[in-house]
Each structure stands twice: as structure tokens, then as C-alpha cells.
Length: 203
Length: 274
Figure (cartoon, rainbow over the protein chains, first blue to last red):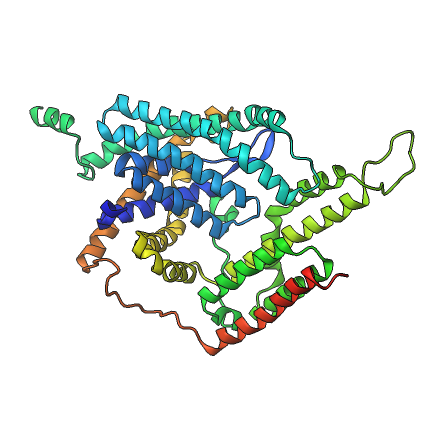
């Protein structure tokens, strides 16, 4: 995180994490499986990743989860928080890496969608290893479903959930980012990407 | 609908009790040991001792029990699920061996024992963590985190920066909640509708709230950066503090007392078979 030493960036990360924690408080149980929580808290992290770089995005993910744990701790978060760290972390880093290369609208869409897809897919192996662990700790009597059953469970419950959550997050981030970038640019908050500033100066 | 009413943020109950005055680092360390202990303990005697210990701490802290109980509410669903699953999936001797109308109740003594143990374990776990957050302010926790992480600076963990960001984020959560509430009301007064239709519809209806919220957040960041820069903030190097963390005799006693109780529970669990 060496390149994050600049103060304003640190503060922006903190504020985005704060927004994330606020959004995490408004969570909705996912229809069908109550312990999956739908919330919009991945959006600030994704915006942070796109606007400030992958490290900043990761910092937002981390801080937001610590804040949430401070306020609403329950034992299921022992699974929920690491899962969110992995899922959201992967999403943010991939989106940021793609978008940071050239900051165009197409690249933003490409980065965010790749991030969302990879993150949803990454949840398959993550759940495959963490779910049995969770069951062993909290439900020692229940036979841990064997490889294939577990895989089906994940494919029919976890994957759709993560896909829905990722889709909502991705679309909203894309729309929001575009709008706030316009507003913040007008106030000199963000530097214009090279191409656009050329066009801007011509016009 | 008032958003502010539904959301309680942070649980800290201010106070001057013995528990409040303990060093947050000591509290974090002892809570961590206790959490591990709760997962390891199998005997009911052990649970009873831990429960008694937590009751004592609650009494000492002067925190009303309703706050503790409120903290237990969100886990009711989880407790219920674990109990049901543990109850019905165990192999062993049946509690009701007779068949009633040709159906036997698949509840075994072993299942019952695990279910009860799991419920106790979950409740104790949340009890102990909420005692920590009830008696320690988030700022104290952040200070303790910075202090505990400081040795890891050498391997590149920016302890001061993380703690500073935590403090800022904590400071702005109430502000942002209030602003969310205001934006919500403002948009509603313009005729916006929330929470209707399918998931996608609902998500879309949140846009008029999210966009201003992010703009606000970035504005706050801008202002705060200007304020801090104009006061010559330059990182954690050589910075002095208003509130210093100090280990006192009280912390020593707490360590001794908890050490005796925790090691007794652990010893009883492994050697003192009942």
C-alpha cells in the first residue's frame, strides 16, 4: 500500500468504507435462503477500486468488513466476513486492474463485468472448502454432504445468489460511477483521462 | 418510515466502571482467549463457569442486561437453524423409541445433547463479544488495533494509516446515515417510490439515493483533506496522542483473575472428567 500515502486518498478510502458500512446495515435476506444477505455494500469498494486503484479498493473492502463486525457481530459472520473479503476483493481488484489501464466507458463495463463473473465463480471453490468447515463447527451431527451433493448445493443456491448480487452491484456501480464521475470532474475532483482531457481542451 | 430509528449503530454504553477502565488491548486479548475457550469447551460445568464469569463482568460493568439481550436477538435465527439441524441428524438412541401412528420421532439423546451445547456455545459467543463492544468505544478499539498492529509495520502493514481510516470512517457513519435519511425523504417528497417490484426494480429505485450519497461522501473527503492538510497532518511519525493507552494495576488484576478462571475451565475440560 506504499502508493496510498497521499492523505486525500486515505480519506476517500475511509469515506467509501463508511458508505459501505452504512449500506451493509440495510441488508435484505435473499429470498429462499435467509442466511445469504443481499446488500449494496460492494458498490463503494468497486467505485473505490475504479477511481483510486486496486489497493485502495481492497482497503475499502477490508475496512468496511471490520466496521460491520464492530457493529453487528454474530457468529455466522465468522463465515460471512471472510467470504465477503474474498468475493468483493477479487471483484474489486480485477475491475480496477482492467479499468486502470485505459479509463474508458467500455473498459469500465468490461472490467466490472469480468470482476463480477470471476468473483461469482470464485465463490464455488471457496464455498466448497468453507461450507463443510462451517458445518463441522456449528452442526457436528449433520453429515457433511459429499463432494457431488455439495457441488450441486453450491451450484443451485450459492452461485445464483452470488450472480444476482454481483449483477445488481455491477450494474449499479456502472451507472453510479458514470454519474458521480461527471459531477466530481466538474469540481476538479478527478483528473481527466488523457484522451478526454484532449477532447475537452479542443472543445 | 424513519431510517434513523430502525438502525442502532455501535453498541457502546458509556460508563466509568472497572470494566470500562480496563485497557482495550487487554480486553481484546482476553476476549479472544475466551472465544477460543468457548469453542473448545465440551462440558456443561465449563459452560456454567463461563456463563457465571460473563454475568459477573456484566454486573461489574454496570451495563443493563437488556442491552446484552438486544445483542442476542439477531442470532436467534441462526441458533434455531443449528438446533433443528443438530437435533434431527444425529445417530444414536432415540428419545421416544415408541412409534406413534407408525412414525418414529428421529430425535436422539446424542442429537439433543449437541443441539443444546451448540445453542449455549453460540449464545455465550455473542454474549462475550457484545460485552466487549458494549464496554469499549469503537475509538478505543481502533486505538488498540493500531497499537497491536504496530509491530507489523516492518512487514508493510500500515498500522497508523489503517487506524486513521477506521477512525474517520467511524466518525462519518452517523453523518452518512443522517444524510441517507435526508436524501431518502427528499426523494420521496419528489415522488420517488422505494421497495416495489422485483429485485432489479428495487435496486433501480435506490439510484436516486445512492448517487447523492456518494457525492456527499466525496465532498466530505475533500473538506476533511483540506482541513487536515491546513493543520499540517503528516502521518503517524512522531505523532502524540491525547489519550494514551496505559497498562495499569487494574489490568494486571484482570489478567490474573481471567487467567485463573480460563485455565481452570480448560483444565476441567481436558482432565477433570465429570
